[in-house]
Image (cartoon, rainbow, N blue to C red; front, side, top):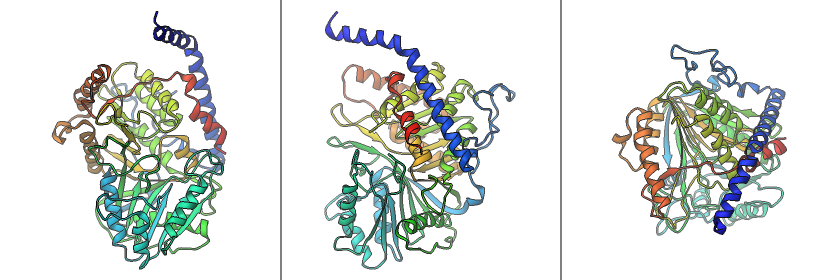
Length: 513
């Protein structure tokens, strides 16, 4: 046997020996994490977030409450906090940075009263648009700050410089934004160990708000990408944001104002809700850990509640784009759906990064659970995005989008991991607008498959099986033969052994607080 063959054989033997132990260790640790999460939320009075839409049979109850087809009945997707739902809004989904950041810059340049930005990190030299004469973020904000208040709230960085941006990096960025300008910057250093302030918000005049996953920085990857993802010299970056106008903007503004006041001691007056600007109902959902701010001493976990309720309600399809798939609570619901699908045409379609910037093995581990639950029945397809050439760095999936049955849509900053659902500050928008959910899904599918909308506008199961799967098959063949990519998507495999899949659960167990 050749040396490579011997190594492969050894790995296969090791895998066969450790497989049962891997599974036992992984499942055991996930149960510990989930039990700790439940105790924590019970203590805080938020355990209902874990039991959202509890009319749906749980994993152990499936089969006891079924409809005429033998599949579990499911409730309609609903709001997390109905009293916070705002009607009369305009809500648009902006796909990829080239589109989103151009609109952000235009809104900032048109500011008449104020510009408020909250982010994970902001870089003074970052340009929101490309081309001759484009402004850096410092130049853009400095220009506007001559006439209106401009306030930037950033995470202060980790207390120990184990990853970027370090606290030194953040202080330098804040100094760069303020140097020679009237821009105000505040650094929020309140966080649980190994967690951060992760939301990405821009609020202009308390009348237009951008809520999504796009950071105003090139740290870790250039956010200025387009749906064609044409870059060959740098990592492509698939992301999404929303632009919101109408009464719901007041909730985004109030959230920023509350955090700004907590960090700086300066109270900003919350705006009255703006007049109607459209016909979309919107709810702002958040993760705010307990004991972080006096304005929410017991925290808020409405993003977690929203996702769990929607996933449990799924009857036709679940479509998720996300940077991470660590959360055992989310995976439990998906596993239950795949083990007991609502019908033969039920589909779960995932778009995840090939190599998350951390936690890669954990993401693959949860994928392994899902593939095992599907057991080859074809209800699940997990995919990733590829670059334009074999030698290109590829395309990183940073979007955080959830669509269920074309009835429920969320976009924001929250990943599907313990960080975003329990420990980082996050903000998403949620809507039950069917047309917006459907049109967003079709637009994303057209981008990823390279097919016109009319080829994708049909029953979801049929489109997944006759468009997505053949594309993945062709891409698999091209990759195996060493040829250039022939499509933008390929099938994502569960490559890791379960013993390597403990990073995310361990982190959740050790640093949840």
